[in-house]
Amino acid sequence: MNLARHSITATNPIQIFDTRFEADCQIFTTTTPAGFAVYQTWPLTLIRKREFTGGTLAAAVPCHTSSLLFLLGGGRSPLYPPNKVVVWDDAAEEEVAELEFRERVRGLACRRGWLAVSFRRRVVLFEVGETIVRRNEFDTCDNPRGLLAMATGPYSTLLAFPGRQMGHVQLVHLPPCIPPTPVGPPPSVLPSRPPPPPSKHPVSIIAAHESSLNTLTVPQSGRMLATTSSRGTLVRIWDTLSGKLIRVFRRGSDKAEIYGVAFRPDEKEVCVWSDKGTVHVFSLMSGPCNRQSSLSPLASLIPYFDSEWSYAQYRIPAQASHISLSSSTSSSRSPTADITDEEKCMVGWIEAPSDRSEPGRDPPMEFQLIALTYSGGWYRLSLPLGTSNISSPSAGGTPLSSSPPKASSHSRPRTNSVSSITSRTEKGKEKERGRDRKDNRELILQEYRKYGRWDGWG
Image 1 (cartoon, rainbow, N blue to C red):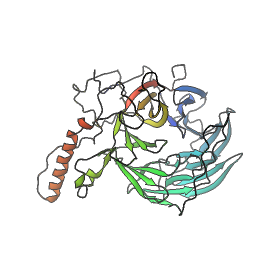
Image 2: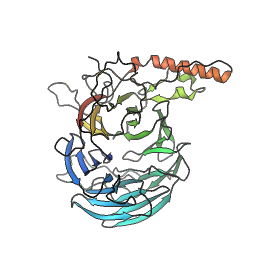
Image 3: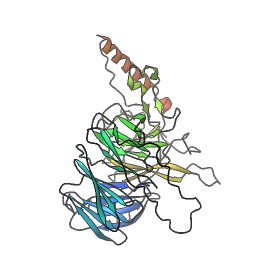
Image 4: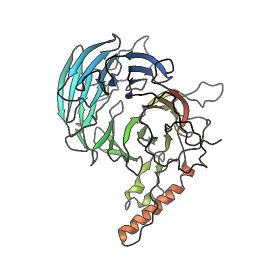
């Protein structure tokens, strides 16, 4: 039986203010009207919860490989003023410090020993040790989203934030991140060694977009940078040492708000998610992995046909007042049609045993995706058959198309050369849509659970 779009709704909806992964996605934190909780990402397990009275939190940001969390007040009745960052030691179960500023805190990024705080037009850098010491301050362009990105891997150094000009990214290199001290018996694998120093001075500014930035993301190593703009159609991947553009991926042809980008731990793929409710996966490897237009020879005339589209995707089910299951053949809406009522989510990569291993053999480890929605949905998604470390098929439904979203099919008069080119562009897009079913591949939903309620259901 082929099942297309479906909706999943809780009888008592969960209100989540914020949810975010730790750097390596082994745990994630979530804030609700009751306080904050820390979960193990997979298998989904509630590790601990902290309930507060007298106010609510906007975010609880975990510091990589430590017991510290940075708390921000928010909501209708904030627990802390919006100009404060409270340092919470979860091992001691108490506040250990607070940072107070003259204006509202817009964003945070942290790693072992360092904290960066973003404001509307500046970024302040702190060294976190026995005491918290202010180390530097940088001016930025207007940054209402509080964009920041910090590499957290061993010996990584990168901190990225908006530059002084709109669409620019400023790169700052901190002291190398010291690996955490191993606990327990010595590991069988030798620890990684510090990388050799760069042969030339790394760039400090990347002119990433002409419009304002929407997201900034770096992998744990800090070797690359992913940027998106307020248009939400393209994802650009940059080399942070040379400042050169590596790849350009197209999420879609219409405007959208991209919520985030996440690099796979081995830096071979990235996933992108937006307010369209769809998670897209792109390959960073060379070769014909991502979908490309059959009209790519016309790219010199029409750059649209030079785009790389995601090779796989997954549509987050819409929240409705009832559970509905409908066949794709009876639905009047295309499964790839963009809709605007999808909920916000956060996506991260994990490494888990394959659900498609052969009987009698230990399942191989593979990279999978975890999607967390702000209504308490937890989705574990595996890559489609035929991609890296996928060994055998599993039960699946009707694939979702990996093609570009449908464009307008209204004909236009051929009054001049410009309109003629536009008409040919529309015909080319029509041919692309005709190839959708042939190239369909979707991420496979392996497990669905709920989180965010602390009465035993989470």
